[in-house]
Length: 321
Image (cartoon, rainbow, N blue to C red; front, side, top):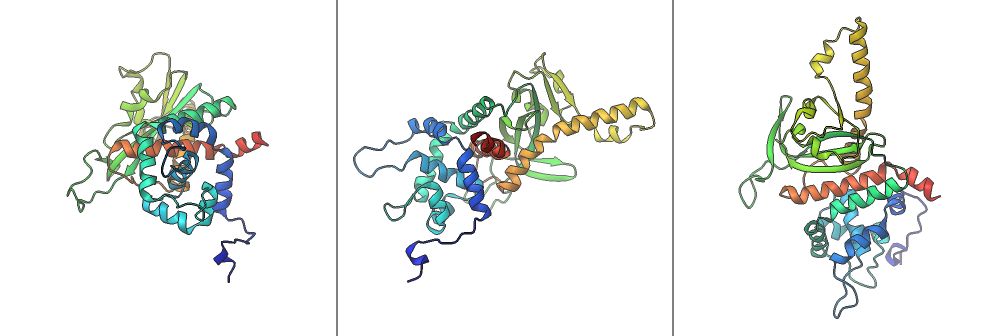
């Protein structure tokens, strides 16, 4: 009989996926998140078949976000990948593994009680307590998330909550994720999910947490300080239009200084792109998975909470050591 038939894994190689899961296992505040979610889930100890541990279901939910797995794909992965079972603490020998319906119900519980927003707030509270997140400055930005534009589905129409918009000379159909990150650390503190045709500037002031003294945005946010919802105690720094910046005469000292100021503002705004890189490249989230803004918005918020932990994982591990 082969060793694999006995469920033995004697390989000493630590793969990148195992390293990733080991790091996230150490930096995710499992106890605090389970305490947040547990009151909304079935409790163990009742008659009949016992529900799965909240911690195990939360780990499965995060595996879906990290590796872009649907509910059916997650069910199959639990059976096929021993590393996933090890991470979740589930044993297929002692009890059946969660099926796709169980995974779906857990996700619906999170959506129904808007727990994704609370998980992001919990993560950020912990990061602030450990001195990894300041609140004196905010950078705002938005990114387009594609949605299927085909009408070859059961309803015969595109998602009515999504919309099309034009960026440059290219048309896009889908949604838009608006975020605000801490200007010092680049960690997300507020997020909103809208249709793609909603202008960036209309959501900018609603992304502020109220404690910052200055805020930064690209050229799409020009005029944000003049809007009715703009707070009077926040100093906005927005970029020049690209055409105006290209027209600057670098030989003129005043205009050369303006160009240097734009470079400084751009270096501050660049922090927001780090979050988008983690979500889109590290976690592979480039297209909406569900219909409707609410479900996709909850998933985006969860991804941003996990991205915050990933961005500061080395600092968190150093503090734990």
